[in-house]
Image (tube, rainbow over all chains, first blue to last red; front, side, top):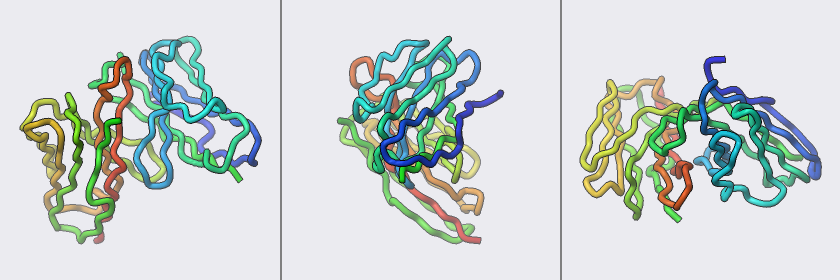
Length: 115
Length: 113
């Protein structure tokens, strides 16, 4: 596709369950980012990939959160033993190279609701 | 920790009015970006300002980067209902090795017809 896609668009889960969120970046973009956005708020950085490596995962809030990227393309963000405070919109972005002045292209997000 | 503070948090105006939103920090940024986000979508980049004192215009939107590169403003002339959305400023983190953007908490703009 032409843009960043994310799936699912909405996910409702019960507290304690594991969830996987998927991001398909723009083809050829080497950098991929995950952010979290609470209702009506700004974006909180989670993790950054350059290729398949994650030079910066300092934003992951706990060890329940993990992410991987394969083939320099698709990325999966996994949240284990979900808690209600994990409810948020999870946004993925990609950029061509990774320098901070690159334009980041965002997907529409996955809205996660933990009951 | 570098913080970007945006003001106001919420703004509701009538179509045709002018407005300015602000993005302030105590830290110097090498550049600042402005994004607009509409409900159910990801943020979309509007502009990047790089040089202190720089002014960029995008149709009815005027962006300014402070001389000291610690603040930025967005001015909208004759607002339209299509300008409604969440406006976010963002700057590159200066932490070593970190390539992510630091985002402000946003200004939610509602333009009434």
